[in-house]
Each structure stands twice: as C-alpha cells, then as structure tokens.
Length: 469
Image: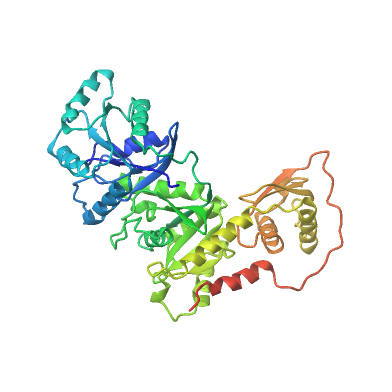
C-alpha cells in the first residue's frame, strides 16, 4: 500500500520551505529570502497519529526563474499536484490576499482534491485574526500558524490528518535498505542518474550549472527493496561561492555525505580531475564512507580503454586507490543498475564483523611481515586487537604507547588489513589505545605464506570491467 502524499503549494516567499522544515522536525529544504530557491520537489516522511504520510515541498507558483528553468519548475509542481492526495495551501497572513494567491487558489481548486489553507507568519495570537481574510478564497479550514515562532503545529497536523484518504494508510514506513549520496561537481549528470534510478523525471535536468540546490531524498524500489538516493547540489570551490544559496547547497551536500551509507563520487569523463574532486574525495575519506568513483558520460570517450582512465584517476587521487571505479552513461541508463549492485556490495562489506581470533592472527602476520620502527629507542608493541564497530569497520589496537606508531606505519597496517580482511574496497577506522593491565599479548600462531593475489588487487581488476559493450 503506497504512502499518501501531502504537497505544500503557494506563491513565492510565503514560507513554504520554512513550514516544511518545521513540520519535518529538522532542516531539509533551503530557506532563503530570495524568491525561487526551491526548484525540485523536496520530500520527507512524517509519522503522525493518523499514520505515515509523505510531505512534499514545491517551488513557488507563478515565479519566473532567473536561469530560465521556469518550465522545469512548473513541471515539478504539476507532478506534485497530480500525485498528492491532499494539498497544503500556504499564504502570507501579513500580506493578506493578493492576486497571486487568487491565481494559485483557482488552479488548485480545479483539481477537486482536499485542501487545507495555512495562514503563515501569524507570529503572535493577536495576528490570528488576519487569517480570517483567506476564508473568501473558499477553503476550509484556514489554520493560523507561524513556522518561525512554531505556533499552530498541532492544529495544522490534525487538519491534514482529517483530509487524508478514508481507507487505511501505512502505519509504518518501509524499511530503507541503503541510503546513497550522489555528489560531485556541477553538470556531472547526478540528477540524470537519480531519474534513471527512480525511473521517473524526479529531478530537474538542465545544462544550466547549479540547477539542483537542495539535497533531495528520492525513494525508489528495486527488486522489492526500498532505497533512498540523495541528490545534492554541484560542489564548487569554497572561494567561488558567491551567494547564501550556494553556501547552504554546499552545507547540504556535506551533510548528505555524513548521513549516507554509500557515496557515489561523480566525475565527468570529458573533464580532468579538479581540485574540487580531490577535496570532495578527502571529505568522504575523513568520514570513513564507502564510496564509488562513477565516471559518467563515458560514451563521449569511447573507445578509450577504461583501464587508462582508471590509472589516471589513481595517480590524481592516490590516497583512495582502493575505491572501485564504475563507468556509466546516466543519460541512456548504461551501467546504472551495475553501480547500484556494486554499492550494495560495499554496504555489505562495511557491515562485516571479523572474529577476534582471525583479527589477531592477521595483526600478528602484519607485525612479522614489517615490524614498527623504533622511536626514541623504544619499540612499539601491539598486544591485542578487537573490532568494536561496523559501518565503518572500527578496529582497536591495544599497545604500549599510541605515540610510538608513526602515520606511515598506521597506513601500512590499514593497507595490510584491507588486503587480508574482507574490507578490500572500503575505509577502515583504526584506533590505538594504551594497554590495560588485564590485556595480554597476541598469541603467536603459525603463519601461512600466500603467493596469491591480494583481494584488493583482484577487485580492482574486476572494477575495470564494469563497462561492458
């Protein structure tokens, strides 16, 4: 059974996005005094006493987009109007009824759907009387609210719940298997990729740089599983950010990385790796997120060998040479499903827990293969290792003194673990702690030498085969 939708509609600058964030309970949509900030449909699930419903924010009706995207914004609004079961019509109580409100009212009245009118910006009880003026638009009820002062939320939610379909609705949202964040520079094809995943025109696709501003959660299903793809604004160098909208877009993109299970780092195959790409990759690395380099628009470079570009990418960003590389053409859907499958594989890797015995044997082999160098005539020692968490895999090494281990040796250990533990393509979080009195040294085990190719090397060879003619 599908989750019912409630679409927030109204003219520009009446506080739709502020109301959306207020009802959602956290900041989702960008709020800015500039008219026309919201372009795509931004949605979130709301759980109420009446059940679960999806709240959808839309762009301002009747605005002329400064970048010539009015037709696309209107298309997103129309999709929201058609798919919603209930409409939340937001007006500005302080401005009163103006012709733009009447135009919106006429348009939505013709749909014949249940409508709740919210008179926003009633910041004090004395201002509630201003909401009465909107009764002449013919909607009932008209609820006086203030998103800024957080007034009238309970009355508004109850009014919306009464307008929901009479048939039973979902009482619990479908469990999301995985959250994907799609990040990258401007015009790398992120929104096109999202539309291919959702199999719908869910995001505005345009050659205009910076088309996407919000970080938009798009729910979609594949093989009976529910996923969330997070489309983000194209990232620019911080020195190039000129407006508050661009600043909030960057902040939303970084937040999307932090809350994602797997990150897709989008690159344009026709353009060289930039400083922004490297900074974005470093941000992903700093937060220990499983990630995939998605080289989009690969059809523009065919028949160039994929291995050649992969070598170039590894030279440009050497600290992430373990990440798999996928080659895709989002415009035609080429390899979109393969990328999703690979993301699920990384998500599964990040959830593996290695038994303590196996982990300590691996540490022992790493120490015997290359012992840590002396520091100030002191020998660094590792006595015991244990995995304390997953996603990311977090390994704690109890030692005589964490300060004795150099960054170089720590990198060696991480690479050794990546080659010999089931974490060949994901970040590993390593922590050193001073040994407690109850900790014992790692027992010596028989060490088996293996001439086989490391699991990481095997996976990197396989990653080049993600583009199949």
